[in-house]
Image 1 (cartoon, protein in one colour):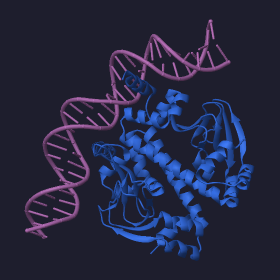
Image 2 (image 1 turned 180 degrees about the vertical axis):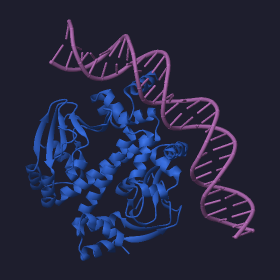
Image 3 (image 1 turned 90 degrees about the horizontal axis):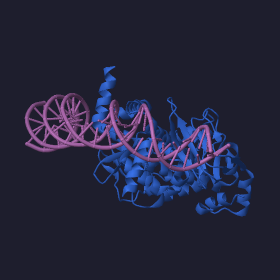
Image 4 (image 1 turned 60 degrees about the vertical axis):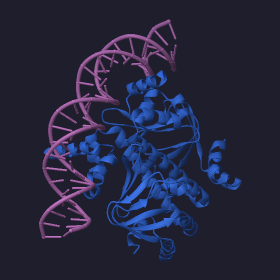
Length: 192
Length: 192
DNA sequence: CGATTTTTTGAATCATATCAACGTACGTGG
DNA sequence: CCACGTACGTTGATATGATTCAAAAAATCG
């Protein structure tokens, strides 16, 4: 049931069976069908979601109705509107399912109890957010310093499985490009 | 001596005098003159630096020799090549002083000992990196969804003190624009 | 004060966005 | 299972707006 979740944990820090039992007692599961929302702008984001199966995206919508994809999440990743989760303020992002999904959810209160009972879990959590920070840093460097071509290539290099599973216009949005431009980049690349 | 540092800590979680004494025993100080490097690409980043006084920047240099500013740090902020710090791999960023600086440094080994002796410090650390992650997230949203004009306005809104203290071409680099473009944006804005 | 760095300005160029139209795939209900 | 409708991807023509390059003006530093 929680196999993938604990596999990810144990990759970084090893947890005993008892610790795992404590942690899992604070998790709940949720299934989501394709196109269903996990979170809508304005709602308070009550949970962090771990993806056991499926694919999701977090995105914002500006005044003109244009979507901007902030993040994708596949199996083994987590997704949330972390600002809303931490502060209790209304969410500024939407999160929805790109495929049918199975999720593990943890609330803020649950997380804090787990931190208290299993200190290693806080260490894990710190390492995980540090990793997410570093990934985001790389993305900024890529947005600032690469040409569009390189940006696309860089993306399909780092996330080959995303390109295969996600509609092209969402990839375009993630990269800050129009769908037309992505289409043309792909054409240019396949010409070689 | 460590006033600003502990002020920042106590804003989030309150530390006792003993705890503060333990933490400060693991810190070292360093002064840097304007234009001096704290870190050069290729070196291993041994420390995280807390800025007591002054201003610094972290930036990368691409094959063409173009600088891309990843981060500024003023009083009360921290700066590091976190990837290099965490992994021990050679740094991919440069860090140098924009003004004369006074820094507090902590090594990885020291940080881990402090985590063990003062668990609250790990909680603080997790909250701090979470805040940095959220700030970076906002920056990505701004890079993806705002026009250049809005991006500049947004920047001077969030960081009015940086604009005053940092050369314009570095701000341009941070925003992913050419210096000429920033100059023109400023002209347009002052015309109003 | 002179030298170097930084900022400003102008003109030409280039890349990407935009708009519109067409082709294709997809899933949904009959 | 097929036909229809909608969503998605492609292609071309045009327009926009930022970059590039060059040079002058302004600011900073020793």
